[in-house]
Image (cartoon, rainbow, N blue to C red; front, side, top):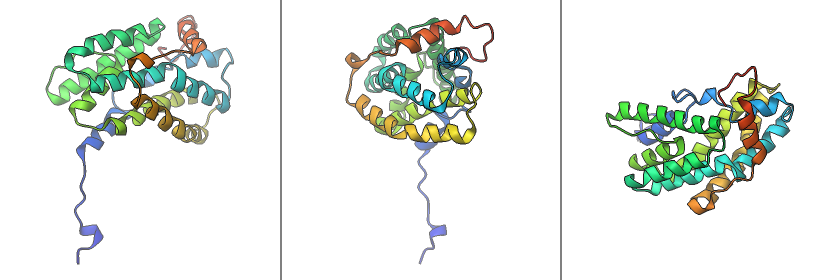
Length: 222
């Protein structure tokens, strides 16, 4: 009889890659961006965990995160010659200079790192485009990685907020866990959607991103 501790464990390297790509330690510089949150917090619009939850849930369902999920899916399904068009669409939906730089710079860093690891030459693209396309090349299920991409997006913004408002580590993690059902629900909706379903109803979040560059003291690039 084979003991459980002696049984072979089937480890899928694809899961390790996803963990690495979406980890805060993956050097794309995600820690440097607050996505406009720094301005919202500085003027007092967000001061509690409840405020932050509402802001995050809105951009997830109706704003920039929703659009990123659509672009991720489109890039996953696209042929290589369609990526430039998708990249231009992603740029057009970046409603501020800082939001534009955010998706371009992180996407450029991701492309550079993956090119070095895979000994290939991926052109710089907005972050959801390059991550979506690489996921397809690595044969990682879209249904598996899409909610994790959204999870990573939310987690990065929550981590940024812990440096700006009285939000302890435990409360921050509780907030992230509270977002799990919504992340899954929105990801399922994005899987059934297409490029025509991109939208933006989060005007105040866009204005916050525009006004962020006017702050005299800033911890973040956006």
